[in-house]
Amino acid sequence: MSYAVKELFKTLQGEGAQAGRAAVFCRFAGCNLWSGREEDRHKAICQFCDTDFIGTDGDGGDKFRDAKELASAIARTWGGGTTGRYVVFTGGEPLLQIDEALIAAVHDHGFEIAIETNGTIEPPEGIDWICVSPKAGAPFNLRSGSELKLVYPQSALLPSDLPDLNFEHYFLQPMDGPAQLENIAAVTAFCLENPRWRLSLQTHKMIGIP
Ligand SMILES: C[S@@+](CC[C@H](N)C(=O)[O-])C[C@H]1O[C@@H](n2cnc3c(N)ncnc32)[C@H](O)[C@@H]1O
Ligand SMILES: Nc1nc2[nH]cc(C(=O)O)c2c(=O)[nH]1
Ligand code: SF4
Ligand SMILES: [Mg+2]
Image (cartoon, rainbow, N blue to C red):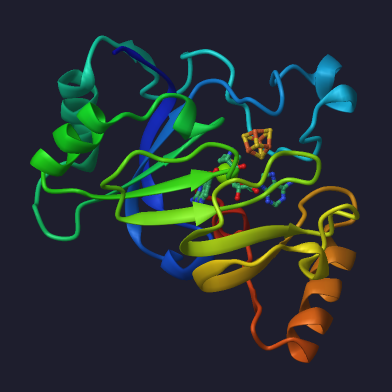
């Protein structure tokens, strides 16, 4: 199996329960809820995406021939040291490409493996941290994991609309865009009244790191 990767870089996880942790981000190309082209955004299932995931032309991006090649590139991107090795597979939608061979190859380099997924596709076995961010109008198939991170507001998918879920952590992440400040205020008010939920800010954007 080959893998199309938009970009591969080391930064701090900006969001959710692992915010502040050093990680290699492996951003896969392609998504099942939007083509990634601006001219298609208005007709996409997911219309608020903040990410360019088309092609393999980003920093560290490439087409990797097999799992060992991609795992080696991830290890090189981490650099020296074997403590705390952590990779976040994101995209685009990473579960369009991740398979058990990749999970095994990355574990062989001593990494803990996290994913950021839209919850439409069941993951293979062996992923250590699963963050699900469901999208209004898309199938919500993956209903358990480490953290649920619901972008707020999505008028057709509010916390009260959610089915039975089994996550360790529940986050609301204010939608970035023209109404960002209002959305932060709305999430703050919601979490004050509904203490099951916590605020997830996109801290990397605040401090100017990728
Ligand atoms: C770009 S997505 C890639 C992973 C996967 N496709 C997904 O949607 O979870 C990474 C994270 O950014 C969140 N996100 C995307 N656009 C956002 C926006 N405008 N404001 C806040 N969070 C956003 C997603 O919900 C997801 O949690
Ligand atoms: N620093 C940083 N943290 C992140 N957490 C989730 C991200 C993503 O785009 O999946 C992301 C990202 O793009 N950058
Ligand atoms: S599902 Fe994720 S990657 Fe795809 S368009 Fe939505 S936020 Fe972007
Ligand atoms: Mg991002």
